[in-house]
Length: 164
Image 1 (tube, rainbow, N blue to C red):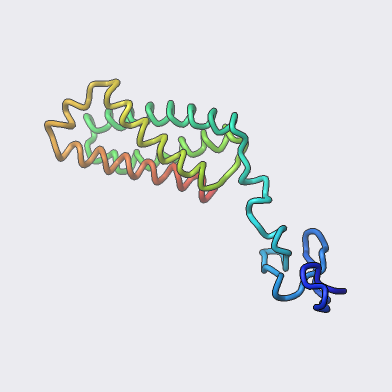
Image 2 (image 1 turned 180 degrees about the vertical axis):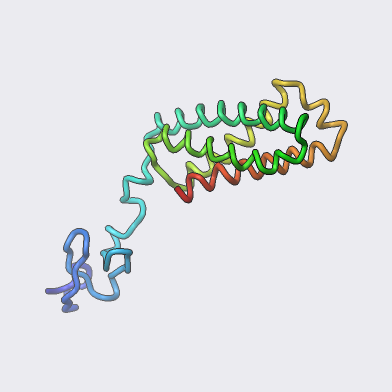
């Protein structure tokens, strides 16, 4: 056999997915063997391809869930001030799971960004909906703690999609 990209190079190696003959220079090591460059590219995987309709649906649901979680964090901050550091990351995975389910369990950087932005924007939206912004402005410690809890929640949401 001769390499598909280099017709003068003789090879006994072929792609583990499509069977195309490849030389060692063209091969890409994968988890289940050697692959050609077109089969090894992540863009060809349907796991990372989200339709625009599903992406918009995931964004809307993520924003609603992020707003609801922001309201929960505000309630916790009034009752159990430092409990937000435990509750935030615990409920942050919920936003990631909602986005995963809305997209049909798809993954990728775009969805990770969507999850993080949904939590942060939802938390800001919840501050203005509840009128809690007045309290946060007058108390820098409360603002810092709430902001840290939102960041931890967003990180948990992104982590849920990344490490599913």
